[in-house]
Image (cartoon, rainbow, N blue to C red; front, side, top):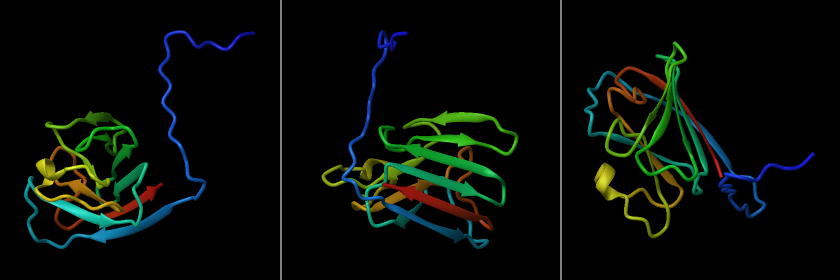
Length: 137
């Protein structure tokens, strides 16, 4: 038996050997949130994986290291998965040192912060919703 390496592009991140994890929740009140708004979260490190779960509507949004800023993999309650990419339905903006992300949300998240877009199609942040998040470094 051989290991198949033909036609593959492997991308593996490097670790500093320190496990980084943060989690939290956000409860939005009835204040209207417009499509251009973002919510900013401070997790304390540059995340490699972010999971955002709108538990009220059962909509999950995930950002993986290597995805472009303002992208997200979305799963709705019925199980349908879609890929939101920069310039369409928006997604996450990850703060990284030396990266200008202000073209997305209007502000730069700092290293150790991420932003989540409120876009109606994305369904991540809406008025009167409870959301839980996890970030892994």
